[in-house]
Amino acid sequence: MRNRLLPLLIVLMAAVLLALGVPLAVSVAATEQQRVVVDRIDDTARFAALAQFVRTLAPGDVPDGAVGERDDNLARELDSYHKVFGIRAGVFLRNDELLTSAPDDWQLPAGGEVRAAFEEALLSRPSHDPEQVWPWQDRRLVVASPVIRDGDVVAVVVTDSPTDAMRWRTLRSWLLIAAGELAAMLVAVGAALRLTHWVLRPVRVLDATTHDIATGRLKSRVAAAGGPPELRRLARSFNEMADHVEDVLEQQRAFVADASHQLRNPLSALLLRIELLALELPEGNEEIASVRTEGKRLAQVLDDLLDLALAEHTEPELGLADIGALTGERVAAWAPAAQAKGVRLTGECPATTAWADPVTLSSALDAVIDNAVKFTPGGGEVRVTVAANGRTATVVVTDEGPGLTDEELDRVGDRFWRSGRHQNINGSGLGLSITKALLAAAGGSLDVAHHRPHGLAVTVTVPRSAPTA
Image (cartoon, rainbow, N blue to C red; front, side, top):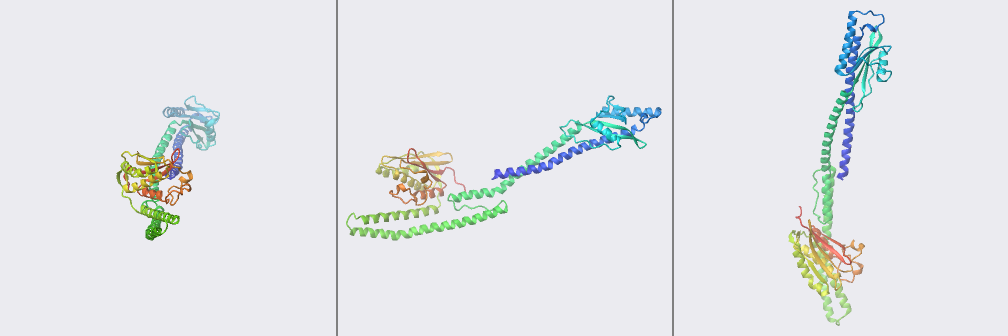
């Protein structure tokens, strides 16, 4: 969820920053150009004021010393202007005739921006705003100002300036804006990381707690602290639901345990009466034998139900144990039963430490080895192997029995379920259910898979690291 929420927040913040940064960059470029244009307008206005009094502006003027001096002053001003700023400037009469310019060879072109500015100034209009020059465009700025005498435009002062310095200043401002945007983006990403962590932390805790409850740790609860109010309310509602589910399951377990315990006494009395009745009947009576078998089977089911209720209710006592030694003891304990059936029971049990409840793990191994020996035909082999796999330790029990189909594997561990092909073998269908409950309570697990060429491979897994609170 974080991988979807975080990119969305980053994209939204990037869009906001771009929406602010792009207009700002455009405004900076326009402001910089406007400043240059205003300077050029001031310069052309000053040159136009000087050009009003030169001798050649009006026909019939008689040159004198003062007028000649003004001609020279205008020419020197334009020349100095060009040398200092690198800006071409010229004064042109209405008939396109050059009055003076700097550099001397600069002429009024027949077209282009210079001609357009000249034509507009002849109409006694202020110079139009030039088109925006961007940093990547190598263009020049043209500004024209009319020279007016007695209300008539007699000449035009034109300046044609390069834009290198202006474009560099604009680019530098853009780089500063980009740096600011980048810094703001980094801050925004950091804020988004903190925000998503704050928002999703209760979700992660809720997910972990849900997994704990699903794996049998019904005491797990969500700490309703931190995060948005909606998630805190969700955490409280989840805790209330978990409490209710735990109460219901506790009532169910209590009922199963009480019912199993209460039924044992009358069933024991009934079995005793059956045995007494058998003494009065002929030896080998089939009806009595059948009743005795069903009674014993019912007693086994009640015992298994009681064991299952206790397994789901009792908290395991975890400690660091030698799984190899414990498994070796169970292999040795089941060896006589396997030998009596003609099954080879072998074990590879190297010393391997892991966190487990010895009593719980012993019961689980008994159930698994019992099943393997029970379903393996005479002459077959049951192999028990202990191994360490990083953070877990495993006990793998393989047999050479008939095995199960893929559909049947999915149902292994369901209460009272037994394969239709194995109904003639003693059992209640609760053994693996009890084993799973015992292992889950201790942080372990049980997995069943095919064993080639035939049979099953049952893997008991326990953690090697200390359990977390």
